[in-house]
Image (cartoon, rainbow over all chains, first blue to last red):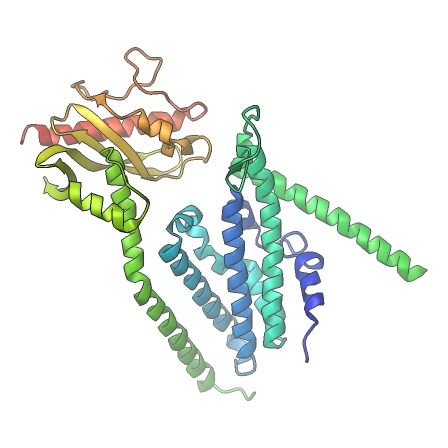
Length: 209
Length: 200
């Protein structure tokens, strides 16, 4: 197998097969860390790093790994990269480590990594797998940023900590609290799905003609 | 690949040993940096409660100022930070903690050397609602506690306005957090004064 073209991998990861709004995985963390945009960004970067390198490593050793213990190997490799992120944040970005709290460690259990490793890296060459990890991670990050943009703007009147709405703005506290995340996530999924439904209709029409 | 019994076990042992070694090395090489970061955080908090100005945010300078003013002492089996300015004791800082609305709130408080004035408080960890109870860690809330008189013998030092004798503003929309915070601060300070004032 020579692997998929980078363009196809990115279209799949960012849109057609986006982990959050198409596969509905990684929901826990997209609800938990989206109260500030900066938290979402760091979380997204962390997940992208972990997914990409786990997929790369798993893909490299996929031919030697006995099939019936592959899950154990995957979990081991994923944990290694996630602990690396945790140590890195603690040592060089202590503020960030404090803000994200236990969620960095919980990247290990994020379904996106396990899902991509099992579904993609197990069958594809290293380079494609690495790109697939970046694409899936980027898809996740974009959705997180979209949600946190709405939450932070309505809840604090800020974007990345900069004040954009004036004093006349009344903060919607509900947006900062967990229920706000449910509303925004649902709306994001709704919008994204309606758009991709139209895409499919167009494709059909083109095929007919 | 032929199915064998030994190979998967060997494979798993080898791969675990390999990755664990990498992590152990990383952990070892960053342990000092992480410990130093945590110390810096604590130093910032202690200097803040004594209202000693920090020249910059550089960890080294914070350490320098900290060593100039503060020394640690064990009083009645508890670790207490003592601030001194050219051999004159400014006051004592000690840990405070209690339950907020959602979870434990931890912090430090500092009292003057005669135990009659609250120098300041700071919170190091809490899990209150961001934007509501979470505002206890905002500057305007913490600054209100500076210079409060501690001469009520029953331990009711902090009273929210507009109650009679009120001296601090509560947080609008976070009544429960405000109440629990004032409750445990009052209790902790009262206990500290009772334990130490007589003995010294």
